[in-house]
Image (cartoon, rainbow, N blue to C red; front, side, top):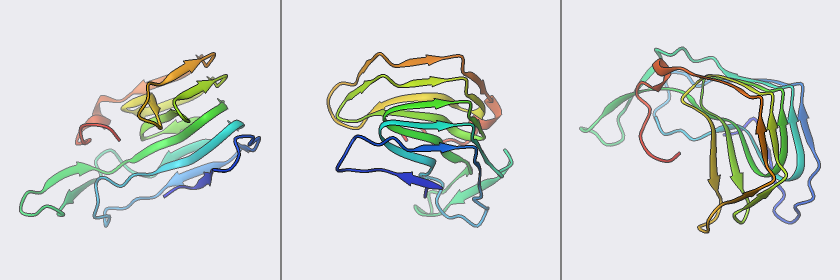
Length: 168
């Protein structure tokens, strides 16, 4: 699930903005799936801006769930928001605060190419991965002219407890 899902599959000329918002992810202990995939902001396009937002979860680090889907082989894991901001394409992402998400910012290419993105002055706290880079296609990822600077990232070792292994 996403608080905002902004994607236009017919055009890459998107110039929308998401700014000055507060988002709080609420996943409670009655959830049944520890692999619940979500990004608070999921954005696709070319030239969009995400800035001055606060993105957090209301989960305490000790909130746990027992995954019963493969009983009797069960395991216990912490609940968490997966991605604070997920960007596909070229964007300006700045002055955001992301707290208690597995990945603060997912940076993904479209068709393996990313140029001109600028991700700066963000604060990412209580995370396992500050910024992840990935590709939406099976080809190699090409990042050209993208700038990542002046971001503050706090990796919380306690928050790694119980995270599943592998790709998101």
